[in-house]
Length: 291
Image 1 (cartoon, rainbow, N blue to C red):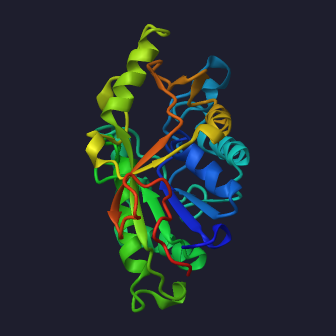
Image 2: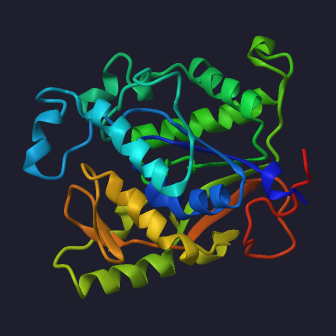
């Protein structure tokens, strides 16, 4: 079993704010325990809407400066959860937000959806070979809910997972490294439905289940991380993304004003590697030997 100081976790997300919603408590826990936590965000989220009129000029159809602003929000969020190693894939602004599926921005040169797979994966391979994580967290093949940047983040993460372990593939990026376990972010359907029911008692509009990323049948969840100790840190990290998220107690809403539960426990499906002795696992590093 790995000691806390020898644990290295890599998370790959599409936009600033995705990490705090899906993994805020997980990041806070492992950072507090002394593990190395590395976050790679694939775009600046330039195509996002903005909550509140005071910052409306940042949007892509006006000054198009939202991406730069969201770097500051991500920095503040990572301060809340104690993560010091956070990066953008290929550097800030290398890949632009592609917008929702079916919009013209999907075809924009330089957007993440149009990225050549191995070229983009190469940037992540360089990080993997530098940091040498034992555990990788990302989305499923549908990106959780069908957003092109989330789908592409999945593709790039899984491709980099393969390529990083191949010593013949771009050795100039560093010695080959094999990640031991890969998890996809999940939300158990029963947890979500209970949370939406509670949200409806407080707010007039709630999110539809299909709009929440990673919803699956409960039996597909392989790991549950108890986030109670880190609930305040997760909520603070989400509040730091103020252009994108409104937090109200145990609930939050995105720019569509549809409320959903701020789920403190975080859920995962193991898709590569051997599970630990318990099911569900309570530690993403269960069964991982020191390396």
